[in-house]
Image (cartoon, rainbow, N blue to C red; front, top):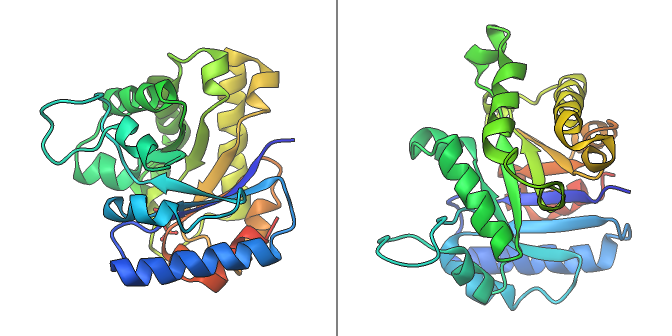
Length: 253
Ligand code: PGA
C-alpha cells in the first residue's frame, strides 16, 4: 500500500518559542491519537530551528523536513544550506520546487532537478512540488505544464530513485487563498500524473509513488480530498500552524 502523508509547511512563520510549542503539541497529539501506521506526519520548520527541533521528535510517526536546500555539497554559496548539513541535524525530508521558490527566487526545472539528485544522494526524501497558475488552467494548458515539470524535474531518475520521491501537486491558485481544488480536480490531475509516470516507469512503479495534494487543505476538507483514489495525503501550509487542526488533518485518511 502507498504511504500516506500529512506534511506541514510552516513557511516563514513562528518565532523559536512559538515553533517549539507548536511542534511539541503536534508530536504529543500524533503520538496519542494517530493510530494508522501507514500515515507519516512530516513537519517542515524554518531552517534555524531544525537542529533543536529534531530533538523534540521522539516518535517514528513524525519526521523533520527542511523547506529548501542547495544542490551543491559545499563551497562558496553564501546563505545556502547543503543536504549533508540538513542530514547532520536529523532532517529526513526536503521540500523542493515549491511555487513560491520557483516564482520569487527564479528556481527553474533544472535547478530543482539538481536538488532532487542531491537529496537522493544523501539518502533523504525529496518532496517534489509542481502545479499550474490560474492563467494556465484557464488557458487549458495545466496538464501539459505540470507534465513538463515532471519530465524536466524527475524523468532523469532511475525507477529505483523515483520510488524514493514524494510528489506534491499544488495548484498555485489554491495556495494560501482559501480556494481549494475540488476533490475531482485534484483526482483528475493526480491520475494524469500517475499515468505520466507509468508511461515511463511502468504502472507498478507509478502505483508506489505517493502524490500529495496542496493548496488550502483544512481539517474540514481533508477527508474528502484524501478519499480520492490517487490522493495520498496533503502538503499543508496555513493549517499546519495549528496543532489541533493539523493533527486532525493527519487523522483524515
Ligand atoms: P496552504 O499552503 O495550505 O496555506 O494553501 C500550501 C503550500 O504552499 O504548501
